[in-house]
Length: 223
Image 1: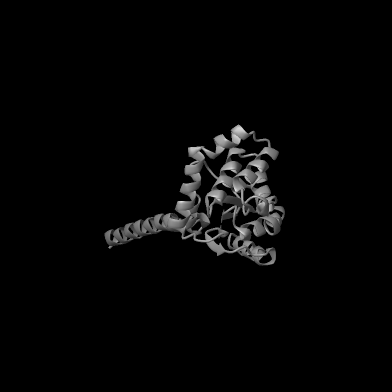
Image 2: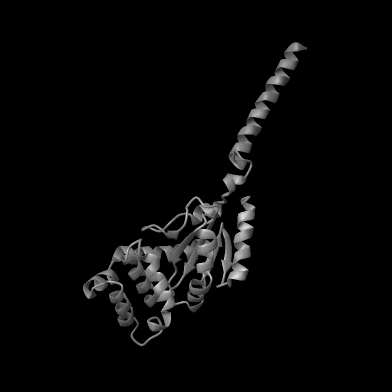
């Protein structure tokens, strides 16, 4: 009888141990799946060959990834009218980590992104913001490359440096790879397309429609 009780107790202990290991593996030590990360979020976290251009704290509870084209008028609308609110209210307060990824529609948008990349990480967003704000002055003109070159000169680029930038294979390949992966792996086929903690959001939403999505994502993370 005592031997049977010992066997039963031993089996129960093993079962508890196994269940505990499974709970840790599938739920995480806090009880949330993967600490709140999904497989999609982990895939989205993979940057292109040259890394991401981002604003905010990488450890923020919410990550917003935007796939945009510099020749997309809807992207320009978001950049000018919605993004500043996101940055002021959530990025600068440590609640959102914002990543801009290249998804150019055409060679002109590719050239714009290459210029921003050539400007360096400290000036990337300054160039991107300027190109969105002044989109009509270069993206849709009869001489877009010359007009882009003029903006580059105002930003401190010599003509030689601009020409070198447009021939930079590493940057070109980065832009191409990021866009291809977005299309093939995440189903991005229009811009702007956002992923808010893995939730896909399409279109240049005004702030009064975009903010509730941020609040929902924060609430889901207990923030």
